[in-house]
Image (cartoon, rainbow, N blue to C red; front, side, top):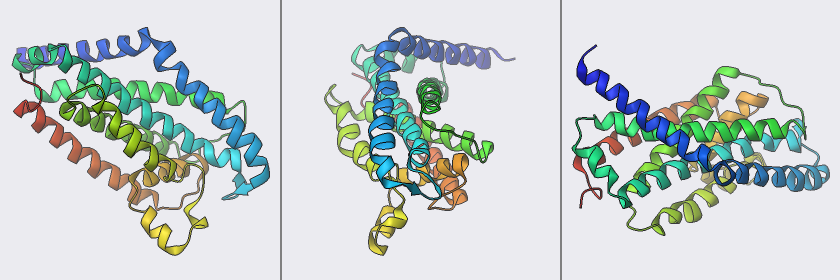
Length: 259
């Protein structure tokens, strides 16, 4: 094992360990709020409204929306973990020490992304366990389920990293979640099937990337989807690769990170 590989491995472990400790240390702020929010969704949309809606896609409305709510929690937490963590490192100037160190940009990026993935998947597990108090769930395709939820966490962790690089203030890191992620999530098929929409709106909805992720995950859990799962997975792989390459280039150039 070369000394360079060993040092990068040590650096990766250090970054991931720090990221994990960061959100676990303040778990009442990072893990508890999304759990409470999802319980409210289950009660209001699943029980109160769902009982009036009936079935959707051959399942009870509660069962139908659970995969979408799990994905919503993954998207929000993976994104927010990386954007807040990396921007804080920029604000405190500690990221400059990483950039001038012999640590590979790939190692730095992977460490922050893994931190976001860990938080996203941990919240997803909590939400899934809570959903079992409201409905029954069974996994239709475990491979697709794990692949989709992991790819989604990676994509939005990378998105959070890019947002943090270009952000100039703490206000900037809230713009994308408020004006981009939230609308796309609510219009991403979390609470409804796009088959209920007119032909024009169905075609327009296909431009929403979150729709592909939600439906692919719903297929993994329930076996139903408005979109071909293979197409959705291919889309996520290409998106993750593109965002990764762009993020590495930002690290190499040091744009917005060196003062």
